[in-house]
Image (tube, rainbow, N blue to C red; front, side):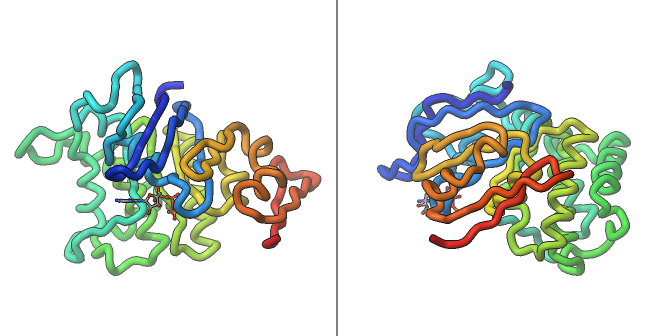
Length: 258
Ligand SMILES: Nc1ncnc2c1ncn2[C@@H]1O[C@H](COP(=O)(O)OP(=O)(O)OP(=O)(O)O)[C@@H](O)[C@H]1O
């Protein structure tokens, strides 16, 4: 475990959103945070990556408190794709991905050969090199999501945080994005922490699942142990059957409102 949060309290003004939470994130694994709307998933993800400050507790990365780390040092270890991200319309795809190299560049210095090589690698591995010269508004939603993932990859972080990376995508592009995340994790060893709403996808892609309810951790563990009929009823008020199918490693979910 290399990213350890303990006793985290996160809030906005006097309003405490996440209360007394302990979380361990393993490098090289895919960790998924699930829970109902407004339960505090994005707030937790933002605090783990220092996009917002927490009120109490600590987040320790490789022995250092992230609040005390220099921005560039933190950005070389943690890459974040927030839920809402926009880029100016005159940006070309390759130019946007190039911004991922900023933590590795000196002030006013141009791109090095290594920067160019990493940008190309990030774009090839995400299948985005072919539209490198297009404006980011000339490509589809699924392609755009791959470009943003390439931008995070170009940063060469050790752990990549993705907040609802499949929102607004149709089912085939959702699965394509999940397959890409799985491939990147398996082939490059990059750790992944995602917020997901689709529990079938969370079951399928995750090594570890953290369930949040009302700003508190309801449970965590291997997806098969955590995504259960009881959890679905307790956390989502949904009746769910877990279906074990011969030949499939992970079960399928069938659910309906109670
Ligand atoms: N900047 C903010 N200022 C004040 N309150 C906020 C702010 N951002 C989020 N909140 C509140 O914090 C709570 C948790 O929000 P958060 O975005 O973490 O939930 P979530 O579980 O990610 O939800 P969703 O699934 O809907 O994205 C919500 O009640 C939300 O209104």
